[in-house]
Length: 281
Image (cartoon, rainbow, N blue to C red):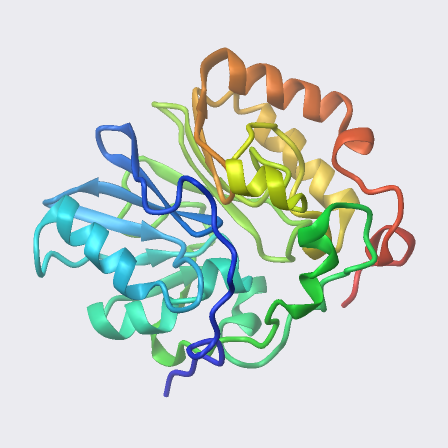
């Protein structure tokens, strides 16, 4: 049995890039859905979906996939960077429509099998208007039933030859990023983002800024810092993050280097529940 407690919930937030897909490479396509990105990786012969967007966005994702790959050309799988509401909002509907497996890190499975709700967002954290209204965001877990599978322990990704998954916790315990070693393409999820996700105006206009994971939902800043350091060492040539526009080349390299060197000043809020307390178990 599958269940999505967010199926009747609409989050009234968007950006100027919503629905305007961008081909980052010939086989990696970034689709903004309101305030979050999903990715199509592959070609019409074989493709996968990375993350599943906002609640009630399944029809938009399906329509974009059909436009790119043709009707009734379903993905081989759905890969989850993590299960927060804006990344898993339509995963149940998509898995049921396409009848495909959904893969995630073992530590993320409780949030995708209905067992455990995420810690509540912190509206008191330092940040802008999005942070202030974050207490309204859903935290109840979806239940993917038999669709959910663990990512292989050896770091490979089913249906994605040439790619590997990297454990990048901090934003959530089981957060992962996806990397193509040969082509240096990084799908970072929310390990870092390219827009200040807590500031409403910057989200709306998608002002580019390499920064840390969304402040109001990040519960372990020490691990988040280690994860960014790990990703910067990969020296990615292209990066698509969960929020914000794709980046490449020197802009990406310089932004990541600065973020690593000044993580505590750039990313970590001056105050907030998860800055002052130990991460929740």
